[in-house]
Amino acid sequence: MGRCPDCPPTYDEATFQALLGWRLEVAGEAKVPAFVVFTDATLTAIAEKRPADRGELALISGVGARKLERYGADVLAILGEAGAMPVAEKRSAITELASNGPPSSS
Image (tube, rainbow, N blue to C red; front, side):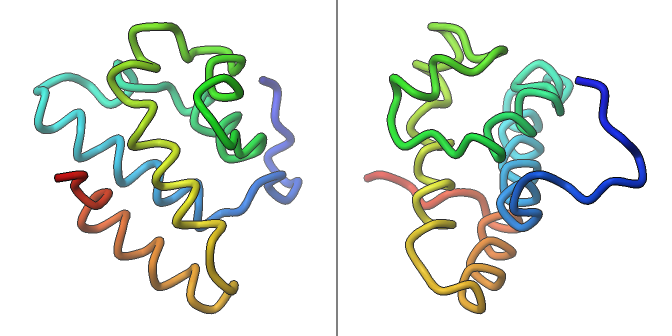
């Protein structure tokens, strides 16, 4: 995806940062490079398109069946948390998500 380095992002920066923080945590736990989880381009597309369900997430380049199964619920939870509150609250919640990872689903 050719991006203009001087152009403003086409996605919510806080959401993208939350996705980056989550990816770093997942990659660290799996002991793999972060790009193995999702590339920056895929995370950018996710932040831009903000899929609402697994079907929409599956349509994004870089999200195959295996990654959808492994990471889909976490990604959708991050997007859901980012979209469910006012902007002022979003920033603090997303910062917390990026720092602490997504909430467990136990």
